[in-house]
Length: 371
Image 1 (cartoon, rainbow, N blue to C red):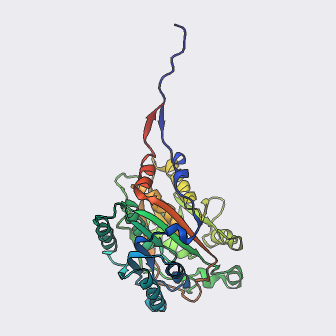
Image 2 (cartoon, rainbow, N blue to C red):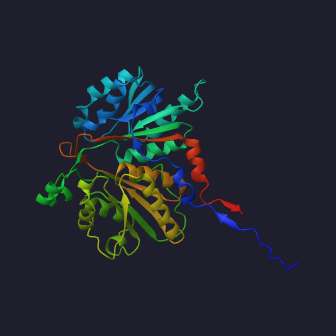
Image 3 (cartoon, one colour):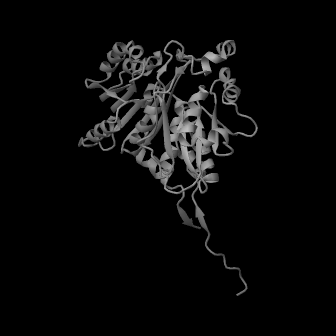
């Protein structure tokens, strides 16, 4: 026979083959959570937006078997102003309303035990959890999302988008130092703690050089402190070992922020910079995976999520996909309750469905098949 014999071809599954199966963010309609939930999670914060979703849900007859609202150790007096109206709305949703402290070592344990108790109910095979993460800080989101992602639940995430995020362009141009320097409050001030996340410690066994990936905040000293914590040498000689992921704002009125972040962090043509959507969580996941593919064999990664909630969601999914990456969290001493955000212009939802299916999709990445 003179025919050519074609040998089987081995193919490795890439993230690009499964990422489109992950749900897009959609405008929220209360019919998306019709039938209620086993658990409704939300956060007590100082922003008026923390009341937006609970009020809307309560007014439209949404019910949950249990409700837990998460509390911070920071800005307690400011947050307290929203406690009574929040609890009033939550009691319309469920007869079981309790709070959980996020800034203690028992937070993830308590959340896991709560989810396990829901799973033990004989009439609930895959309990639905609805999580309003509108005013959730990064240090809350990362451990919370890890627990939710690893649980056998159906998950819907809700988000209320602010009408105005401070600083506005006029505020920034009028007095840049008050928003960016640690001596002034701006949107936040100081650092009370910098630590490797207990939930994302990574696998840093190999003696490889460190590489830091940052979703920076507008406070440049916060980013500098994180880099210094990982490796002080990276402050003076970052080369390609400090990677900046700058958020592309969802709203056109905030587009000036990208250039401002470059200026605040003294980034130039030699800096390693990626622009990543602040609203499309899949964009963050895709970008992080590309960086990992490019450098993962040569460095050990430390990831600092200080960006938007949607970027943090993409980060949590990436950390599930790449457990060797460790996460470092920096907690501010205080936030500026008077000038953080204003109003609500849109409500959004991401319906992940069964988290087992999400895990199955992500677990396909890196697997081999013969074609």
